[in-house]
Length: 379
Ligand code: SF4
Image 1 (tube, rainbow, N blue to C red):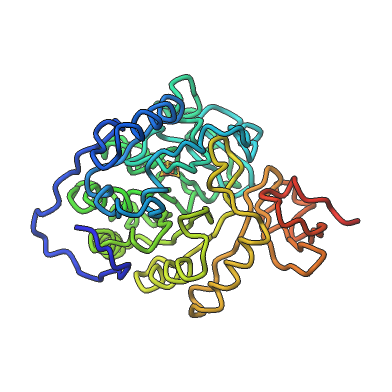
Image 2: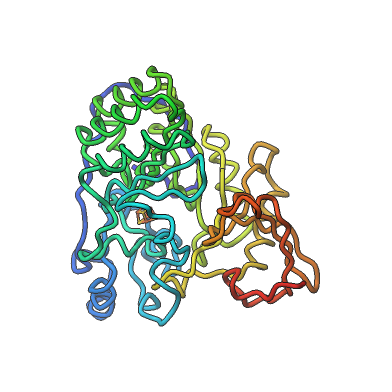
């Protein structure tokens, strides 16, 4: 099923019903490759941050390598219990005018339609959603849709959570058809790591494919905001999933955080960016990993991440170089644009306050800082 070579495939769908749903794995005790001591340790982690994967994704792991990047991505780690970060590192609560809807920039709104994912990335910045007490996602999106209808400045809507493709197709139909009827919404984005975790969700669901086609035919631009973190996730099935949705008229881009031990080296990142471009899913953002609770083991200092991104950009074609390295900060998307021995230079790529739009920011260089608030501004 998966390839361990890192070489993505362009194999196209044959139409054969070869894509069976994967068995979901949610118990650490089901991981036969771990020792009983490891399982006992990691159960303490999953008591706090749940674990979820599936058989196919777990097969991508090289269990002989304790530092395997796919293992780091999805298998809990004791470092998640270290005291670090906050639950809402980008202060999304401030941009939430009603439950399940975020509106930070005038033209773009987010609907948090689900708290489910096919796998739980250990570094997830929205892991607060997976707590049973969390109420940020809503089942009934009527109020959110009313908000979209009454805010004519909103032209882009992102369905996210959670993974938007975790929703049953019937729910997705209901939501997409209602959004498609809003004239001023021109672009609909589906935030999803499904093609990495479980491509069969897309490959085996003709009704989902028909929905995508209908949405495109309704005149909306439909984007699949993919989330591949490592080239080994670009399995033949993932590549096939991309090809299938592209043939339906869906445009694909990739976005991923720079995470320690997963993609924080030039070779891996360049390979990911170039492979995504070849599959028609070019890298859109490279994000600074947010200082979210549980993420101590994934944090990469800003200056190091900048150097990795610069090194990777230098190795890839122009199409792959368009990705911006940004922090999703409470005040906006801030792109790190340069470094010298003493300074870090940044610029607002998107600003919450229009007065900040495009503003250049200069900070004293600190090679330990993993988030902007840890840097000292230079006046
Ligand atoms: S798929 Fe997205 S929302 Fe789900 S755990 Fe991963 S990063 Fe978080």
